[in-house]
Image (tube, rainbow, N blue to C red; front, side, top):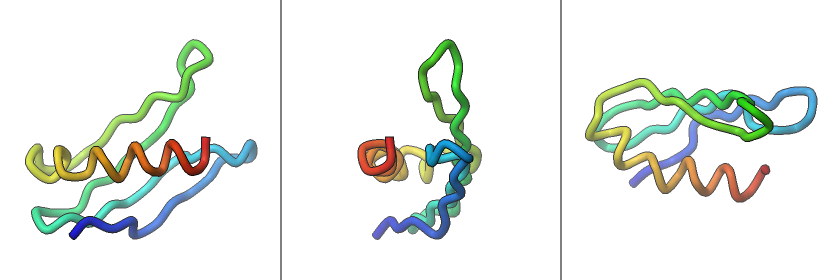
Length: 64
């Protein structure tokens, strides 16, 4: 089971940071605007990051 632990938004109500908990570990995600597009980077174990990708995509669909 994957779940969103926390989400922090910027002043424009776009996601800025999120913490996602997976069975393989905790992932920290940060969004940045580069050339007008919102891009994300993550930190944590590779296997856990791969599990977190669908959750990150869900956050982007919900709040972008």
